[in-house]
Amino acid sequence: MARSLLLLTILSLTTGLSVARRCQNITIPISISSRNGVFSLATPANDVDVTDFVLNNFRAGVNYTDDVLQGYKTIQANYNLAATYCTPESGHGKSLQVLTHGVGINRYYWDFSYNNYNYSYVDRALAQGYSTLIYDRLGVGESSRGDPIQELQASLEVSALHQLTKLLRQSKVPGIKTKFDKIFHVGHSFGSILTYGLTTKYPEDSDGIVLTGFSIDETFFAWFGYASNWVVANSNPALKQFPNGYVALGTAQAFQAVAFAPSNFDLALPAAANSIAQPIPIGEILTIGSPQEVSNPFKGPVLVIDGDRDLIFCGGNCSSSTPSAAELVRPKFTKVTDFEAVIVPQTGHLLNFEYSHPATYSAIINFLNRHV
Image (tube, rainbow, N blue to C red):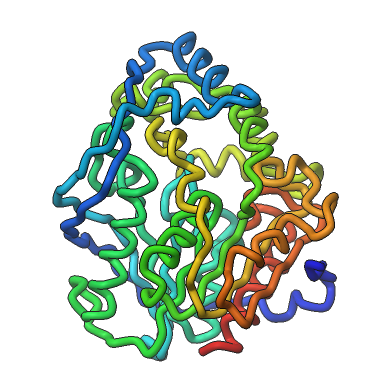
């Protein structure tokens, strides 16, 4: 059974911290190869097309990805990843956390500046002596872009994370010459799916993984699609530079529905989060579940942590099943000896942005501290 956190007993680790940090923005060139799906899908050109795509893709009993899949093609290309590397003021430490964000946001999900960085996971990690690397996934933020249907898919993102990790271990990332004793991977939502995919294909890449906002049950993905009220991304003036083939949340209410638990967030935060909002390439939607379809040979420590009111993976109740949504992941890791599942009470999908974020951060850091 998943462990449920009592917030009052753990706030001391993660609140009231004033963190001295050293951060630098860097650009990381990568050369990668990926086996991508070739989809016979016309690029949605307006909101009606987007709604048609949602209705087709999330239809019960239908695998729309298979329906539009024509075959496979190998993508070989060079890209740039935009990243921010941070170390404690005291030095780089022995361990690095590589943090992968989900869809609809950029890398600053992990280092959100709102309310004087009160919601920054990076600050909490630095305070515990870790170095951190946050990066914009391909297709969003300041990283390289590509065809939003045929190129920007889960497989390509896994390849990018693998190459990034390889360069870090070889001390070949510009501006990061430290050779860390351990590299941990922490993901959120789609970032967790990619982290799972990384350790499935390259189990030696990581010394430990944390999967936040994650489960293997795709039953409620349709709820995500319907509740998001997606529109053509470039109809939003802030996202006008993105071509057709990207979608974005249609309303503030849609953001609330897919992201938050009732009455557990600062009412001004969703508007502030517009500063890190990003669109979603349709290729990622079509392939979002593919990395987690197979068992994982990873042998290192694994933490899965979900908000109890997560809509996307649990239909708003991650404790409704026995075992819980987080605990359901355990059988996928056939060789792991240290697996922990945590449910954070009264918390939605965006765990970092809820009032309960100190509980989430404590669970992650306490877990990793045992494996440094």
